Length: 267
Image (cartoon, rainbow, N blue to C red; front, side, top):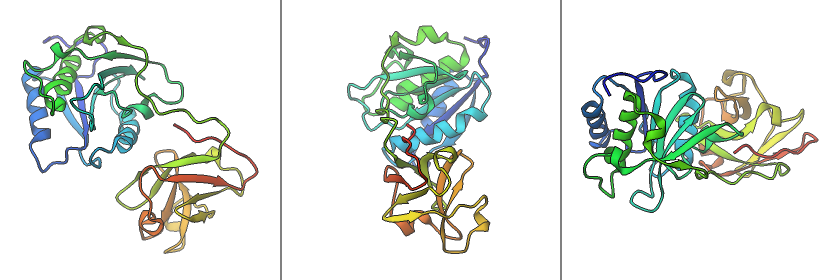
């Protein structure tokens, strides 16, 4: 596989909940170097909260569009490692994704996007695949082989039903917290278009109605709504942490109130 396959960028990314204190990320990079030395490895994030599938789904969905088409993204947030969950490879939006089939690719695949999914065969992993470190033994080598030129169809048999979260019913004005960033901004599942004039968001026992276009425009210490760089509406606190003030974290309920119309949450 020294010849790069047409349409592949030669770039592989890692997104994990492994952190950087232990050897786990270094071991996966070593595997890629051994399998495909000319593949360029880039880190998206290794600080996903432990077992944080929803946080991992948000991180990869926000980052992957900014990489060249043909990039392979290895996402390892895998609390079910060693269980019956399948190792998954997905082709979508001109990119390839390698991950456990546990919903961590849900935001990449949401909204009716066209994709092809395949179950990764163990032969694409290392000679010995442990039951506790598929990131090193299966996902890293499989991703490296794809980045180096392995045909997507050769990674394994098709899968028709990769795990996705249940869709909303299209009527209830209910959403959730997708992510809390290091500044304490609470990223909700609502878009600007979901909030009609006068609509507010209720989260953490508070109803927030004020809206601003920039963080600095709000009064210091006041909660407000803003469209973040992700395209989702955030509940923020100027010069402070909205998440701490509201005592909420990823997965918390968010409700749309007022505004004269009802919408369903995304994802």
